[in-house]
Length: 362
Image 1 (cartoon, rainbow, N blue to C red):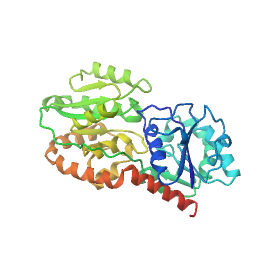
Image 2 (cartoon, rainbow, N blue to C red):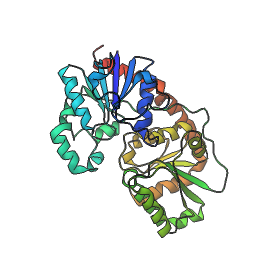
Image 3 (cartoon, rainbow, N blue to C red):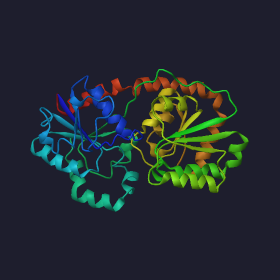
Image 4 (cartoon, one colour):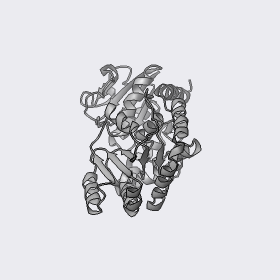
């Protein structure tokens, strides 16, 4: 079976698709003939072979790709809102090549609110047809499906999330005076709900100081979010509680995660955040909002704490987490075991190929 993933990746290591899509291709190649066609003019992501990576810089049309990927058995579109997808989909439909869409939260009600008017017009002209003609939609989580199902007409769907390479070193309970909450992600204030998170801390900063609880943030700037964060922290005298840092990757990221007490994500919209999956795989308790699409998993398997997208409720969960720190070893055991069973890339890739075969009727 020849599988072609089509994506728009700029190699920014702070965004999930730039990590997850290449990994899906690499691991999927063990079970089928899989390649990646990147519509962004970029060099191959780290670790992916040039033999299975094609850039728009070199190939302006799917018909120009080397055989058999100029006429694959199935195509996987990573994301929705790229006009080039619509042109390619037209060619695929004409040549009876089925395709699957992995929307990555683009079809959710929250996702549609971003650039609302542009998406509304785009849907009417192009994207409704793109989605309607797909063989199936691959939702990363059940919650993503629930938040998307009434917004578009589509033929079929299934659930399959992102994966991770399981870490060799895992979390252990810290014995120190400071209780560290860690956030790792882009400093996109609206997307990541950072305005509500900071307001939550500011409203209860006396408690944070008295209990030696701090928030360490790591990420790259996005939509001038860094300027907002620094200004808010300075104006509200939160420098002792909140520390802003640049982006971290690899061993540096692992070191920060293993030195934390809890990982927090207060996103308004996500597909399935890689950073949360990573934290769970290390055994770190997490605090998540509904927009992360991870609340059901965290609640059902007792991997951490959940809260509404609300200042008071976020603080309530942080306080509950702090007061429950003696139970973290139990959370760690459950988290590591859950990650082994659900997030290992070998498992995800094998299941992906199985799903493609089912859709092709094999």
